[in-house]
Length: 252
Ligand SMILES: [Ca+2]
Image 1 (cartoon, protein in one colour):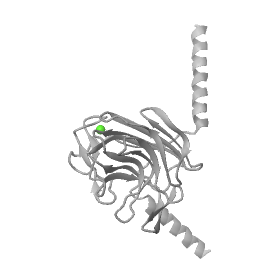
Image 2 (tube, helix red, strand yellow; image 1 turned 180 degrees about the horizontal axis):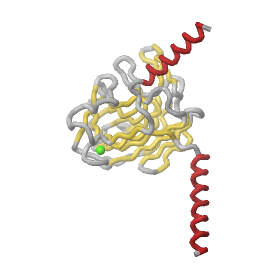
Image 3 (cartoon, rainbow, N blue to C red; image 1 turned 90 degrees about the vertical axis):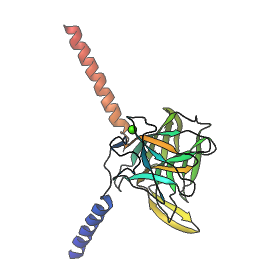
Image 4 (spheres, rainbow, N blue to C red; image 1 turned 45 degrees about the horizontal axis):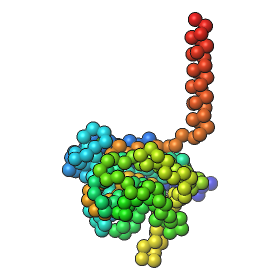
């Protein structure tokens, strides 16, 4: 009995510790309240060696965005911690601006392994000019082609829904569904570096520079995906309300 309660206290403590510093969903960031030229403050932090900074050279919302550069061996990152308890059906949305060929970045999940920051369930604007969905998990690795020859200059909208129960993802680029029910990696990944496996819990999400010139990032939203049943209920409720309104209107 005493052992059980100690275990319970320990697991509650573990839960509290694992969620300290974590953001709550929905999480939205437009970078407008931060100082240009500085690293965005908490809840943002960086992995590996490089820090993203706030810029006023490009923006989707307002006048500011986040800029990353430095790759391939000093890649800047900016991530927030979702904690361990985000829903199995989740999504991330963000805007990316790439100005020159050979420049490359990821939006998605990352973690730090020694001085590396491997990518998981991430949308990859590749140096080859294409966009991929990418996962560095040793056992669930993939690189799925999403878009060929993305345009340089304009902001690109990224929206990814991940179903961690069935390991499926839907990806939209610029509001076009470019991959439906494609493979997704699990919440618990394994990354291998120099023959050593590292266990990683997917919870750090944001942007990572990979190569070439600076890349801009703005209006980042992470949230639960509404259940289809909820949407149906809302839709049928609205149809019901519309019918009710019409009835009232015609009675007059
Ligand atoms: Ca902004």
